[in-house]
Length: 231
Image 1 (cartoon, rainbow, N blue to C red):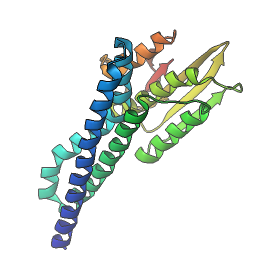
Image 2 (cartoon, one colour):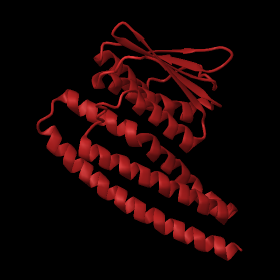
Image 3 (cartoon, rainbow, N blue to C red):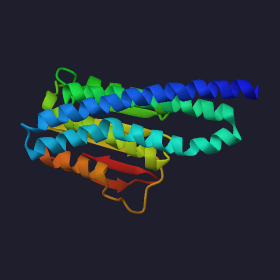
């Protein structure tokens, strides 16, 4: 039985190496595309591209690193669990590869004619991948312009990643409403609120997106536990 697990582990390890080779090639393509773009881009555009890259692959690569660091201990303790972890890391690496290539080809997200459907799809994919229930409600009946949905999409993407990483939440909710010409989005989780919120790159990026669009972003604890982010 142990020999079979070791063989599965070898196969999974080879798959991981193949995925990383593809990921490395995608990074090279990304660097070339970024260099071409930045020849004609201003500093503001450079910041936008950096934010898009962070949003799309940052949390995936973090997960890969964490699991790889634990892998040597898992191999000694349980080859079967190590093999399962390697297969999971391989899937995450492949997902990162897809995200990198999307950035290479698009250099940003286009949400034209997508509207609320893109937000719903983001939430569904997130819940399905991580097993965290996220409810979604939108009291908006008018069509949302593409330039209005871009900022909420990116902020929601980053906020969900933060909930997964730091909140230890059992569920979350997302509510959208329209006030005159403005869109309000409230993201709430039932996790453990931190005593202090460090303004890392993710939070700084979210605030920057809001300010650039003429909006505001606030974070506050909710009772009995959890955090509420309002945009």
